[in-house]
Length: 264
Image (cartoon, rainbow, N blue to C red):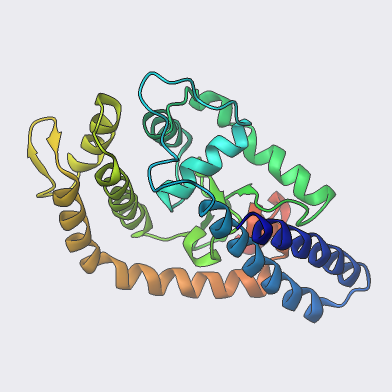
């Protein structure tokens, strides 16, 4: 599998060079086609990388063990990959600290998105992923205090009227599934699961107590009510974003002048 990862990395680097060449030549249709190929390769790279883990619980550091010294952006990437939805810095820190044995301070995440945008604008698509913005469905402007992953479909990064609740429920399912895979649950993961369960009807079996299976069932039941309308809203907004925004704007939102013009 290591050879597969290395081969995908070589393909990604070659494809990025083609994207830059097509961008320089002003060949927008080719750029769009190459970008789609690039995103598919990046997703395959992430999946191949996950398979390098020795088992399903390898991403969690045992209680009391020292966490690996990962760069902050990689710690955030791990937390968002587990959550699967755009998330505020405070919850990202809570999830990483509970599930990966880390010690992220949410205040350190405030400048990450700006740093990622600067990096992207200097060398577009030069990284396997970027920590980017979620976009408000109505005006396609950056949603306040939410971080997302550039490798996610644009629809997932759109925030409509129902999206905060839908994202909360999907995150609850992901966290509950993660906790269910653990051989045992420590105080940190139990507290994290309760944070979700207490806000979902029927998910908790007592004060301060929640079981993964109950959280999953309750969250999925409520998702059946909200998800179809939310998906339709997100898909329509994503189609507008693809038609109106540049590559950088789809990741980080339009600049103040363009955003203001779009509101007139």
